[in-house]
Image (cartoon, rainbow, N blue to C red):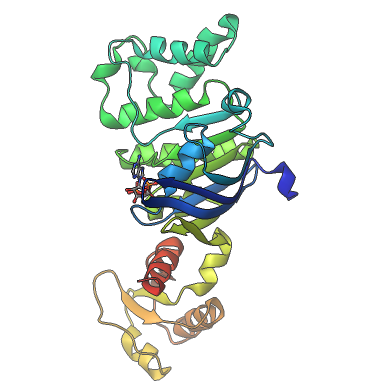
Length: 306
Ligand SMILES: Nc1ncnc2c1ncn2[C@@H]1O[C@H](COP(=O)(O)OP(=O)(O)OP(=O)(O)O)[C@@H](O)[C@H]1O
């Protein structure tokens, strides 16, 4: 990737509120065609960074580029290219759902001739078509979140910023959000999403950026996090699983209905162990990493920084 082509670039960005230095030197690259997750503890500065990217807050110093444009010098041009979903957003409760999206189409200068079709398309996309003629206030919290995603997409932005989009969503809506964001990335959009729900992010994101106390700490490709993983969970129908593990010098944890956990050095060691267990006629029905990549990496990272 050529950095200049990135959807978002942030270099040494800083922002303070009085005595609180909310962001003190963040660097970030969000490529087009990928979903990048912004992950960090409460108060790490995620929302502050997103507000600056969304042109809603000026940085004290540092460099920001959105679709190659400077959000401080050229906020209108940046706004026309970004889709923004804040963590809390007011909805105009009295409007009907289709009017609400129609209003944002107008605000984003979607031509009137195309707006009606765009609204219908978006309501379909976020599974709210049946609520098109209902006032927004009848929508549940999760449905309002979905409306917020639709609102962010009205003008087909090339950069998408979402602050905690999965909060309040039921499991099906989360899967749908995942599919929707993956589809946006496939179409070339640069997607940046902050979330605390790490299990979902693992399936949504291509890359993760860890932030803490106002700084970006590390950046990983999701696929690379797997190699750090050490605990595996194994379940067998019958055969002496625990005995077979012990005979190989391993120290399995207590057997539970979910299986037996064991620490392994590498994915290679896991592959060898599975082959050996099958050869020993242990009838394995489950064999996989315990927990998830992102959660393990996040916990290791926050442990280091306590
Ligand atoms: N308008 C403000 N005035 C004063 N302090 C603020 C303001 N906005 C944020 N802060 C402080 O800046 C720090 C970073 O806040 P921010 O909301 O960016 O964190 P976050 O990573 O989004 O947290 P969370 O995960 O809890 O949403 C916090 O210490 C917060 O109290």
